[in-house]
Image 1 (cartoon, helix red, strand yellow):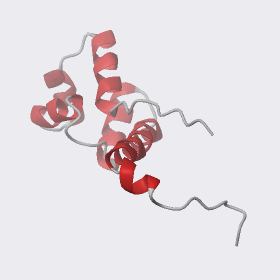
Image 2 (cartoon, one colour):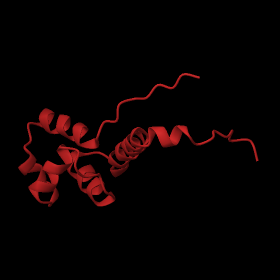
Image 3 (tube, one colour):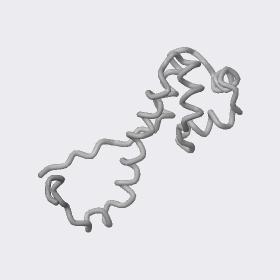
Image 4 (tube, helix red, strand yellow):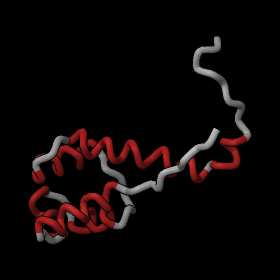
Length: 100
């Protein structure tokens, strides 16, 4: 079996593209969603996750659902952890889902 490992893309990268397309600064977004500019900066650098609270704020301010942002984070997290624990994960036995 061949496994293709996709690159983990932090939600902050998606946010950066959106802000660029809107010609909106980090500071302007921070003011619009009511969080410190440092929090937006950390998010754009991939240094902090999308929380439920942040997903609600971003969704409302940018016209998306909060679930969009949470899905990005939920997709990102397992890819990062899988990369981090690659060797120890390979040591775990594989069991078929339909075996009791």
